Length: 298
Picture 1 (tube, one colour):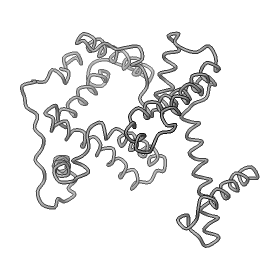
Picture 2 (cartoon, helix red, strand yellow):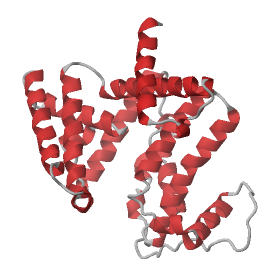
Picture 3 (cartoon, one colour):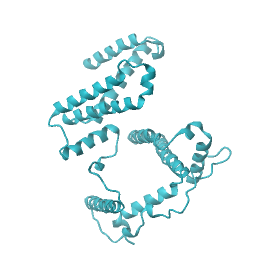
Picture 4 (tube, helix red, strand yellow):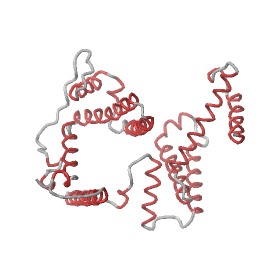
């Protein structure tokens, strides 16, 4: 059987109604079975106020966060942590599938079928007569098959735009990559000066949205402020790119530095028999400066 004979998921009978799984009754046991997990998720969507409130869009940040935490767990090589984080990633899949099933769009079986089709289609050297002798050949064939899939999508009216090549990843990673792709097409500042001017412009617009505004007005205009803040961050990423720096790495360096300095504050307070909760901003700010001095001396 050729991979071309495998029908894409969207060719499934659209007349088949997708129905969400029935919620588990009573107090369930941890059985290790997928069907039981799906029924448990259905129960949570039915009876848990937080789970009932969620949408596919509201879960996006959690899916990203869980993927990063899985990466950290794998790096730690702790089996219990890895199992826990793999479960959290699986939860995101199950959660999304449950909600899409509630919308009558598709369910977990459809997702698994789509994955199986893709794996079979993209491994003709395993399931067909093709012979690929090394990793480079497998990668080249994989790219060819992906191109064939894109042609099929375009034939269905799903045209791929130039910036659709942006890599998946954190917001900073996507911002820098989309700017890189646009630059290849000639849509870019000549030097870093233009990027700085744009950053200053966006910061001014954000300040305008916040200046002389009451707390109520700011809360009422949250969506617009979010857009302006996003523009500022996007412009700052552009500055990083023009300086040949990686915005994600720069931000992670800052995060680690902040955690280290705050840890120093906690240690110094503990040595004095105090806790952060019993301190104030003046004391903590002084210790923050001490942490900076400690960094320079070490």
